[in-house]
Amino acid sequence: MAETTPDGLPRGFRSAEQGWPELHRIPHPPRRVPLLGDVLGVNPRSPLQDSMRLAPELGPIFRRRAFGREFVFVWGAELVAELADESRFAKHVGLGIANLRPVAGDGLFTAYNHEPNWQLAHDVLAPGFSREAMAGYHPMMLDVAARLTAHWDAAEAAGRSVDVPGDMTKLTLETIARTGFGHDFGSFERDRPHPFVTAMVGTLGYAQRLNTVPSPFFLRRAARRNAADIGYLERTVDEVVRARRASGGSGDGDLLDLMLDTAHPRTGERLSAENVRRQVITFLVAGHETTSGALSFALHYLARHPEIAARARAEVDRVWGDAPTPGYEQVAKLRQVRRVLDESLRLWPTAPAFAREARRDTVLAGTHPMRRGAWALVLTGCLHRDPDVWGPDPERFDPDRFDAAAVRSRPPHTFKPFGTGARACIGRQFALHEATLVLGLLLRRYELLPDPDYRLRVAERLTLMPQGLRLGLRRRTAPAGEGRPAGARTHR
Image 1 (cartoon, rainbow, N blue to C red):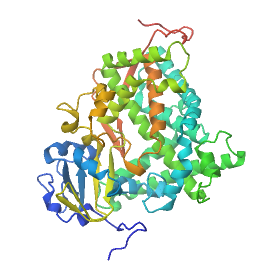
Image 2 (image 1 turned 60 degrees about the vertical axis):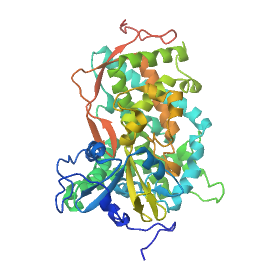
Image 3 (image 1 turned 180 degrees about the vertical axis):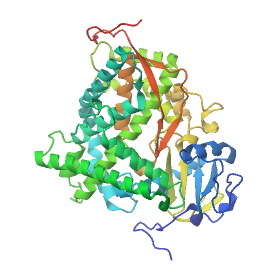
Image 4 (image 1 turned 45 degrees about the vertical axis):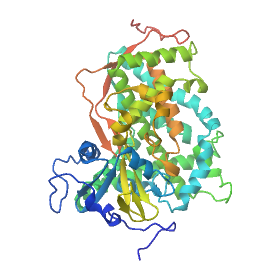
């Protein structure tokens, strides 16, 4: 009998094949190569987009084999709705997520379901994402956004384009570091990315590459680099925690204060020092990497669709009026801006997939038996393009898909940019508030000028990011009350 985890799930499922008794009934790409598998035409730098390309021709459930490992992919809306049933399925930690455990361990994102620190941390940190806490973060978000606009003002005055993914990464790193942990990385004062970002990108890239090679033996040099990156991330976080302990607390009750000072409301348990480190790394990495990608894709689409940008900009001007900066409540009133963000997340969910495993023996869609512990990977970008849900032209950028009537007309579980169930992203409201605020501020201040020669290329490092995206800026005539810096140019 297979060894099981404390919650009854089998340990050691190395491939989907072990848990799918009738795997042969699930289609796979043509021209399968013996031993190597489905490798013809595959780009090791974009395995997810390769799977997205194959999905329409293979159907709502399909499989791919690589170096002896079989993976089952699901994207059809009805199948995903079944996998979202928490009574039958749970989060599966596998593929690239499991590859991040050397750095994140049993942090919220990478913990196995049976590990007790997941629920402990979730319950301890939940107050950090309450409405009251979010309102407290709002002024700090504005402060960081002001650093971004100062940087962009200087670029606009000099006639330079801006590096959108690079600047959004600076913005979101500083935002989560400031609001969650009282730390300033000084990203906007640097010409090059902060070493924390370099190390983070390195660990994410290494985790991704582990899925595309037959053995870690082929990544020995990269493994040494990854170990150094992990060491840097841990030392950085340890210093942040030491400084907080020495200061006796932030006084703001931020996420780090909760981690260090809060006992579980029922059990009285506290997070260990090791788990605090893992949670801080998890929030610093996941809390900025996905939001920066979402903002970057949204800015790309706004620049390419000036009529949509004009509608959203008019809403910002109307809702925020002549106030120099918006209040917390005013951000939630930007419904057009939020639709732009949601539509960008539909087309390119920056956390592009999530895995689900069977809690017990079951049958998916009445035709595909799954043993307890068998798992499938939901391709979120394909789910968000299912023509049965999104219509015959799902590639078209159309924020009106997210007006209230359209949302009500769709079945549940068809829009999943933050995962699903009990293990969905705890920080989703933080990310949505931050991203809506920033898009509103940028639309209010600038016209976005696309490079006519740019074609969207998507970089994969477990998360997704538009590669090489630069935009020109034209400073708008300021709405009443905002003012303009001395000497600034006015463009009509």
